[in-house]
Length: 318
Image 1 (cartoon, one colour):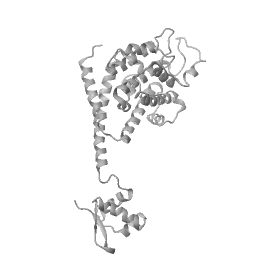
Image 2 (cartoon, rainbow, N blue to C red):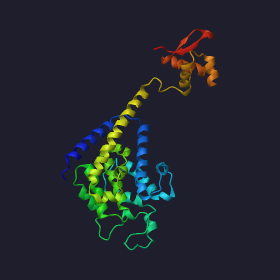
Image 3 (cartoon, one colour):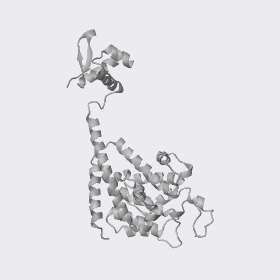
Image 4 (spheres, rainbow, N blue to C red):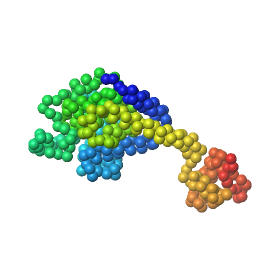
């Protein structure tokens, strides 16, 4: 497949941004917050195409492993995303992995469809009509994966997997959502853990519904353009936060206790403090007061003046 100049240019920028994010040194706590936000975005953006009344608060609850009975499909999707984050680090997509992803998404849903009669259009009467049931003649997932494995560019492979799964419907049900999940899996392979901070479903669904994208035949451009916009924005935010994390880690205040920080705030408004005042202010023993204040002196944050009962402490003048 011949890629346009625009797509090639965006892919190069995506790769640069991905490298910078990987080398940013952002704290695990901060990174996990990005992952949490991306999970909420994924659940909310896909959820609202199926459940018009879903709120972002519902998506947030679901992302924190709170199962909501009315949104079983999204609970399954959250579990699928957790599986993808773990498994994609170790293995490229295989038929077994693809089937397991579909099984996770369909858990306790397809079983409930079985007793239901088909409607006049040959479709099950259910909430998830647009996701499609496997036709009598369909390509199996093994053949689809063999076909796309001829593609060397991972992001192209992700878009082709999405299109072929949607077109040939190799699974019993929920083919379109499974296609989206497998696309996320392939992007995770390409971008390593950084894919976890991208909401691929929001990228796909920012302007169109899933079924509109399926019919557009422009999946690669939508995917690349969406990732390009998202990852450049994320790069700027992550680099800012990474700088702040480094400042915090290197700060002389980073390992101070709550009492020590509080006494520094006290000294912003009061010129001095002695050990007796410290003991009364924080309800601590003489030895605790001595250790806390001496530690601040050792760090050259405050200085000690006077002797004996006249000893007091003040902010170290820079």
